[in-house]
Length: 99
Image (cartoon, rainbow, N blue to C red; front, side, top):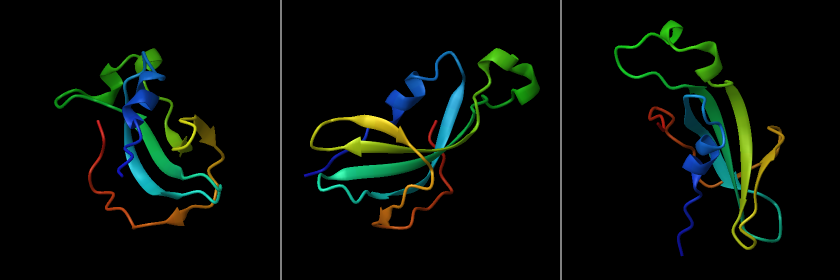
């Protein structure tokens, strides 16, 4: 069975900011239920040919790292403290950014 956490839902919650994200880590939590942990780095998404300075301050993304928990059994999605330990499945190639 495949579970695909809805990461774009997290971006919707940041509207009207122009946010993009990069997945910098993923793994499993130590909870008895299947809990997928995803660590994201948020940045201001800028269209090609547009400078960051052209984006109004109110539309710029609040940048930083966040860890989110996706509980497969309950459907609960919540933000966690970044130091949350992850049982890593595979080291991610961070060369591709989500938009």
